[in-house]
Length: 339
Image 1 (cartoon, rainbow, N blue to C red):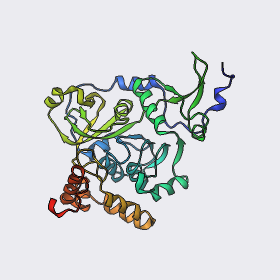
Image 2: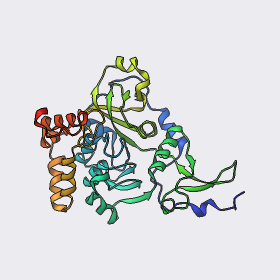
Image 3: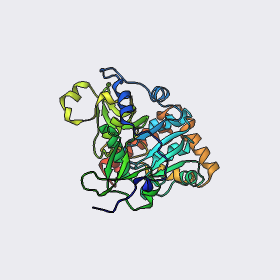
Image 4: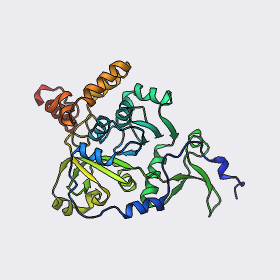
């Protein structure tokens, strides 16, 4: 048997931004309608109805892949404030929300970095200046917190983070296994108020199909109290029923469906279009100067009436077709023979 210890002495010092009370969450989900109703709407309506100031957001996708950019832009345009964010594999999504001054607290695993592209200086300033309250986790820890919520349990036991400063600045607690006595870390369930997820295909009821890497979206959709899905295209329900095993997110999890082609731009949409690396670099360069960046955000997010107008400012259909070719034929960007 390991030496005895007191779990409360080894609890993380970070604040817990959401309640892990699974029974309370189950009461909410029990009242959620499960009828097959048409949920097709606009991004403006979905955000206005389902995202409020002070809500805690979970964002789907992975890194710069399959980001719900169009929905995030709408959150900024509608001026949402004091939002919480699960910084799980977050790149451009975190960059957008920080640019809009939307976030005041964040469960951090991976934020600020845009992978190999570099760091978001504006997001980094927000964290360094204390404008965003932080609790630390690992990517796996946040994924398993979603999993606990999806399972309807208040926590999951794991071995990760033990003995690290990440554990110290988390909100996890050490426990003893009741069977073996070994030390474990208890990861509290994470129930976001709202999940924003972009998918390849969906029907009007909210049944979703996703191609390629999914990471935690399966659990996120089941953990969140409200789910807004944006999709590249709407398909008939008959197509969903024809291949039921391809349904990654079922209709009863979803509250709103928004058809937005290229809705993950400038990120990568696997098998659809490549990321716009030039535009992502424009973001990073603009962030070097706060005044320049404020003008950049105004031009690209606040002023455009909708996401389609934003896409036009970024090169429109010609640029989007280039990115589609690049996804299917890597190395062909700029080749005049493909134009």
